[in-house]
Every structure is written in structure tokens, then in C-alpha cells.
Length: 196
Length: 155
Image (cartoon, rainbow over all chains, first blue to last red; front, side):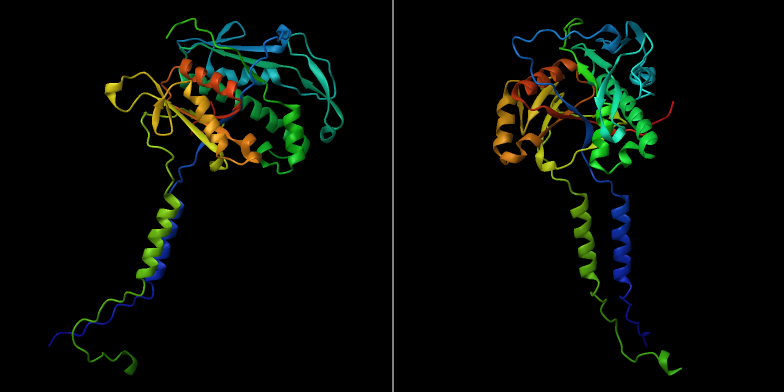
């Protein structure tokens, strides 16, 4: 006589299913689009005069077609770029307009959240690349410059509001910090020196 | 122990199908979550460069994509080409592409349109610069260099 087979208890099947569902939910990385957001400048008007910017206010970064860097007239390395850019844009004392000779000048701006009139750096990072520069290198440079600005913003936010910049939720505070440390990256019109 | 008395029935009882809906729902949810709608079939090969300072692109409905990279079909050469929607294009076609994108959005959203540049990392900047210049001319100032997230290795 065959042994009678018990009915399989299906009550826990739903639990197993949910377990699997949660497992996949946790482990699947969604294909999100991410990247470095930039704002292009509007095309220059026909009759525009060259804006004169003092030499000391510019941090020049040139990338040639061999992906080599020239930072302020000297050969540079992409790994040092972040530190150099940070040093250039650093603004420890918002209360005073006095700066050493080799640092960019400051200008006075009214930001109420940071305590009324403050002095912010007039420094501009000028980025110039060749047509033969690889896109990868260009992004690395953009990334390091963005990182420098982000770190400076983090430090300032820490001083004033006691948190990191990306932890700020108050729109006004975000605006204030952005105004105090703007993304001062200017891209020159491209030049074709090295050929393709 | 009457509780555990074996039933007298013969043969195999059918497996309960009560949980089948759960399994189906699980599969449904899984695919719902992982599926990303592809905007276009890629005709170019794109390996995005890596960066640490990436921001997520929000409001995907307000993003237009421009793909630049070497063609997938080797017969078309290895020089980077521009792809708009489903076909190869030239720099001058970008104006029409951007204007088409604008006409599909509400008036209030037109300022918020972001153009995402999905560019292969081996591409030379020349073609990217041309595209950027064209975007400036057309007035599509908000751009996003599509990059993959790299963990910040503190050197």
C-alpha cells in the first residue's frame, strides 16, 4: 500500500516570494543617469569688447592634445589640480578684503545669511582645451575643479551652519553658499593647435 | 495523539497554487523596478568616463540626449559620430533637434530642459566642442556631461 502523501503547506510560499522580491529590490541597481551639470555661457554679442581680468585673478588650466596639463604656466598633474584650485579659490576670512599679493582679489557682496556684507574671491578658473584633447581627460579636469569647489563649499557650510553642503535643505542657505563660492569656471573658445 | 492521525486518502494531492499570484506579482514588481525605458537604440559605442562629482539627473522627461561615439558598425569607421534620436546626424542638425524638443514641452518647462551629452571617453574634444558651440547658439545652456560614478579614492 502506498504511503499517503501529506499536502504541502503553501502558507509560507508568499513569505518566500516576498523575501525574493526584497532581495532583488535591494541588489538591483537602477540605471540612473548621472553626470556633471554645467551651464554654457550665451554666445558673445557681436560688438562685445574683451573683458579685462587681472592676471592674478585667473587660474589658467590648459590641456593639450596629448592630455598634458599646463597649470598657470607650469606643467601640472591632474592629481594636484584639486589642491591647486582650492588654494587659489580659498577664502578663509569673509570679513576682510585684504589678500596677499599672489592671491586673487576680493569683492564685497551682500549676503544676509552669512552676516551682511562679505568679501568673496574674484578668482576665475580659466579652462582651455585643444580639439585633440580626449573627452576622458576633459571630464577628469572638470571633475577635479568641481571637487575643489564642492570641498570649499563644504568647509564654508561647516563653519556657518555646522553641516555639509549637500546636507543643507534650506533653499536660502544653499543660495547663500552658492553666491559666496560660485562655480567660477570659464571655458575659452577652443583652439586648433595640435590638429586632430 | 489524534491530532496527528494520518489521513486515509490515497494518491497525491495537487500542489496548492494559492501562492502563484504572489510569485507573479513578485516578477511584475521586479521588472517594473529594473526596467529603464530606452530612449533610442544606440548606434554608437559609449563608455562613459568616470567622475566623483556627479549629480543625478532629475526629471527625466525634461532631458534630451545627444550621443557621441564611434559607430557600432565597424564598417562606418572609428571616428566619433553624433547620434540624435535613432539616427546619425551632423552638428547642424542639432538646432532642429533642440527646437523639436522645445516644441514638445510646455511653455513653462522650456527653460528647464537639460541636454545630456553621452560621450564616449575616447572621443576627441573637437566634436564635443562643436556640439557645445551649436548648443550655445541655439540657447540650450543647461547641459550635463554624462559620467559614471567613481568611488573617491583619497590620494
